Image (cartoon, rainbow, N blue to C red; front, side):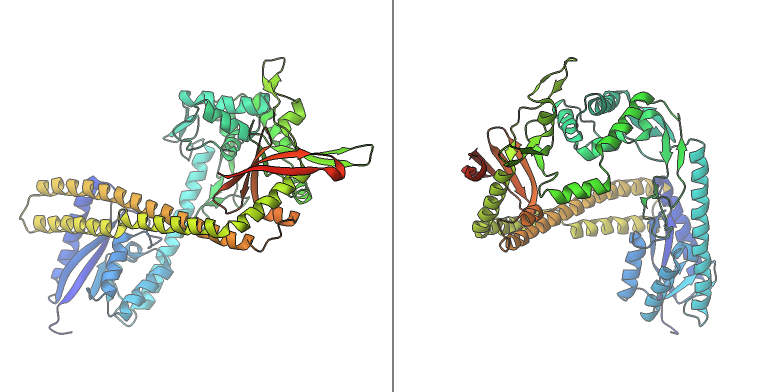
Length: 536
C-alpha cells in the first residue's frame, strides 16, 4: 500500500464524569495524534469513544458499534486502541470483531500490547492477551463480589429505596411519610384478617399511594408482608449475578450463601406482629399438592371474585334428605361471617353478596362462548380496525432514527470543537463551555430517544396483544360450549355482583361480557335465564 494514505480511527473509553470527558478526550486525542504522526501514510479519521461503561459486553457500547459499522462500510482502513482490555474483555467478542474487520481489510493495532492483527502472529498473540484480559475481568468480578459480601456482613446495605425506607450511602433510614402505609398493610392483613386484593383496593380508595407505588396489587402487598426489613432485619444476596460477562441477575435459590443480619436497623413493625404475620401467610398459603388438587377439582377455582368486597368465592356443597346435591359458590367473607356488619371491636366483617349455583355458572359460560362464536366476525373486524389505528399512531410518533441522527450530529460537532481547540482556533475555556452545552443537548435528546423507544415498544406490545385476540377468537370457534374442560381453558375470571349480575372475562378477549341472570326451580326443574347481555 505504498503511497496510499490509510484512514485511521482511534477507539477510547472515557470517564462518565462529564466534567472530565473533555479533558480525557483531549488527552487521548493528543496521544493518538502523536502516535499517528509517526506514520507518514496515516491520517486520523475520528476518535470513537464510549463513556466509562463495562467493557465485558460490546452490545451497549454505541461508539464501538458505530466504529465497527463504519469500518465494515469501507470508511476506515485501520483502528488503533491502547490495549486489548479497552477494546473488549470478552475473548469471543475480541476475536470475532477483529476477524470480521480483517475480512473487510481493516486491521486493529493495540499500541500498549504491541499487537497488530495484520501480522502473521497477530491473532495468536491477541488470543493470549484477550484471554488474560477476560481472566482479569473474572478475577475483578470475584474480588468485587468478595468485597461486597464482606461489606454486607458489616451491615452495609446494597439496594434501592423501598416503601417506608430510603437507602443512602449504604444506610437504611425510615421515611416517616410512608410508615402509616406499611403499618396499615400489616394491620389489615394480620389483625383484621383481610385478603391482599381487599387491602390493595382499600389503600387505593383511602388515597394511600406513595410515589414509588404505581398501582396497588396483591403481589405488591405480599411483597411488603414478606419483607424482613420492616421488622428491622436485613437479608441480602436475594439476587445474584452468576455470569460476570453478561451481568444478568437471577434469584438466588441457594447457589450462593445469603447474608442475614437480625436487628440491623430501626423497625417499622414490632417482632410480635411480624411473627404472627408470617404464621398467617403460611396458614393461608396451601401446599403445592393442595393447590394442584383444588385446581383440578373445580374448573373455576380461583377465578371467581366478589365485586362487593373484593374477596374470593369458595365452593359450597349441600346434601339434601331427598338425595339432591346442591353445588354452589359463595363469597368467603359472607360464608365466614354472614351479612356485612360490625364485630365487637367495631370492625367491618362479612359481605352482602349472593351465592350462585354451579349450574348457573355453567349455563353462563356456555352462553358466553356461543355468543363470542356468533359475534366473532364483528369483534374481529373491530380489533383489526384498532390494530390499523395503532400502527397509524405509531408512524406519527417521534422517530428514534431521526433522533439518533440528531445525536450523531451533536457528537460530530462536539468532536469538531476538540479539533478546533487542538488547532488553536478556540481556547480550552471555550471548549469546556461548548462541550457543556453539547452534553446538555445530548442528555435532552437521549431522554427524547428513551421516550420514543418506550412508546414504540408499548405500541408494538399493544398490537401484539390485539393480534393474539384475533387468534383467540379463531380458536374459540372450535370449542365445545358445553364442556367443563373448555370452560377451564378459556375462562380468565368472573366478577359477581349482587342482584344476579356477572361480569365474565375470557382469556385473550379484550372485552368482558356482563350478564343479568335469574335462577329458579330445584333439582331436575332448576333453570337459569339470561335476562340481559352487554359488553364491557
